[in-house]
Image 1 (tube, chains in turn purple, yellow):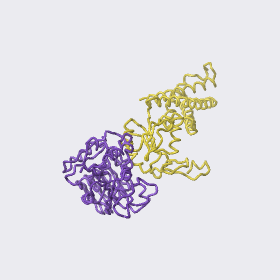
Image 2 (cartoon, helix red, strand yellow; image 1 turned 90 degrees about the horizontal axis):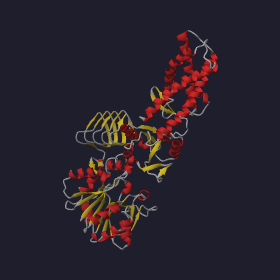
Image 3 (spheres, rainbow over the protein chains, first blue to last red; image 1 turned 180 degrees about the vertical axis):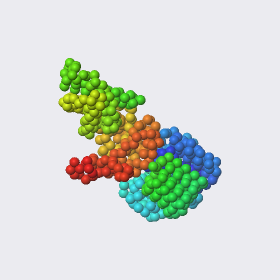
Image 4 (cartoon, each protein chain N blue to C red; image 1 turned 120 degrees about the vertical axis):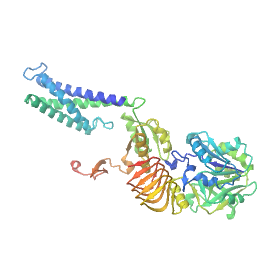
Length: 316
Length: 266
């Protein structure tokens, strides 16, 4: 088996946090989002992470910091969204060029999955595609995802609709799937016409009579595509605590909800509620609620709610 | 450099036009043949002394500011005000130097001629200056953030009026289907901001995406770029907003519509 993680997106909805940082490298409760995925993948499974040239160095630095030697960073040679190969296109290109002839654990790098990959892989049947699904219990929300129809509530998938206008189910694909090596030619073939539609490949597999099973889980799952999702995921992982990273300091400050203070950041005379502060920030006499401050921000004497501040912001 | 040169030329030509208009008033009132009763030399000497003082008054009205439209009524009012001060300074200066008062009609001629000629000169010079400032590469390349009906209208107005702020790129927080608006390319979403700013943009006009104001301001401060905000981003669409001060704290004010004279008092 080989794991392939898609991490090439430009994450425009999370601007400015993703201005100089790939979304999968965003710290979630102090740990890069993608690290949650990688550290749960069995040690003997080689991991390839596909990203774009803009984030090459950042990914390589991060990979070097891991205690794992079988992580490879694959650079998609594009500098902007317009030139992207597409998620499925990148996957297909890697399968072809690396001559992959093995099962592929395909993951999207901006998702947080609370379940264990051991349990997921244990649920796999030979020569059957397996996708991890989560019940988001809201038909309206389901419109933004690939929905999965099963036969009589079993694990046997009978239908897949990518971002349906009228969802028939609240069971959604979570960006984690196991593709048996027998379907890889179909993936390559489908990517030629639909390079951007990863979900579409499951519809194609069903159309060609290939079996798909689903692994349903109830643990936390977050698609970190927006500011709100990022804050929600932080709340879930931090769980009402205050995480003080190395070299940080808090003085005369009231913290409520989930608060993360990044390395070498200092907070004084302030009130923080559900706030993530990245490294090297200085906060004095502020009231912050539902805010994310990128590194190097220096703010004093202001109240902010629901804001993301870009790197190096100085206020006033 | 191009802007500074043009501005210096404007100031110098304004001095010349001011002195010239007073000379014209003299010749109209006193006659084309130089009078021995009211000699031209001391007259023009006082005008020359007054001219820089008049120019300082005109500068303080921000008539030369980049964003000022020379054809606006407000600008004409400032020019009239400066000319009045100029005429008063001239009369006082003449009295201080020579202990004499003279023809009131000459003062009236000087006031009217200097006002009209300066205004016409400003209209002509600003047209020339705009053309020079917009010539490629533009001196003030401007980034528009946000594609809205109002920003489209703004881009059209800036281009149609040959405003010194020349829109060179458009970004939108959520993306936009148009490839260009009035010839200005839509470069994408805000993740392209750094790229666009690094291309030498001098001004940024925020037309939507209120939630990103802090970040756009931060980017402008870091890159020494002038930030501007359309009041409509704040929901102010009345067109009579103004920035005032409450005990030194700046506030944007929109008052209820009432008698125009109350504008001076409220």
